[in-house]
Length: 126
Image (tube, rainbow, N blue to C red; front, side):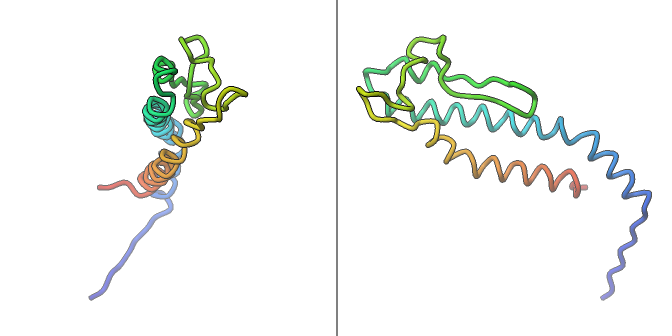
C-alpha cells in the first residue's frame, strides 16, 4: 500500500485566509455557549448552597457579553439578593464559593470546546 499526499502553497494560503477571517466569530460562539452554560451550572449550585435564606439569590444570576470574546456571569447586584455576600462570605456566613465550583465544572468543557473549534478551523470535516 502506498499513500501519497499532495499539498500546494495556494491551498495553504486559502486556508490561512479562511482561518483569519472566521476565527473570531467562531470562537465568540464557543465563549457565549460556555458562559451561558457556566451561569446555569453556577445558579444550580447556588440554589442548593443558599438554602431557604437565599431563595432569590440563584435567580439573580445572569451572563452578559463585555465583548464577543469576553463574558461575565454571576449574581447581578441589581436583582433581589444579587448583592448579598453568599459567594465570598461575610462575618455572618462562610463563603459558599458557588462561582468557583461552577467554574471547576465548566473549565474542562470550555477547554475541550475551544480545542475542537480550533481543530475544525484547520482540519474541517469534509
